[in-house]
Length: 80
Image 1 (tube, rainbow, N blue to C red):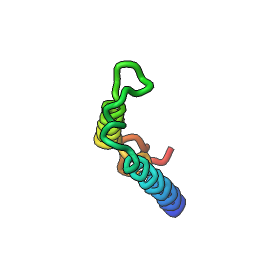
Image 2: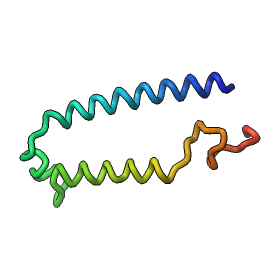
Image 3: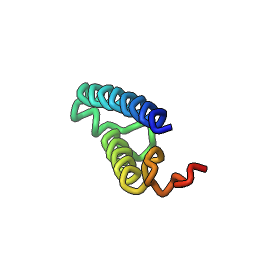
């Protein structure tokens, strides 16, 4: 079972690394003017949306345990 978890984890990490690279590439195409432009979300600029999303990911990474980690609070140690 550990091999399956490691394979799943490796696949997830690969997908996350790909998404991160694509996101960074996209950010590199934006000008400063793009960040201060009004977003499609009323009342928010593109930069504010980006900051909000980034903060959310930081909070989630700190607060949520790793679901694939057997020592995680979200995983039953008995495997049930």
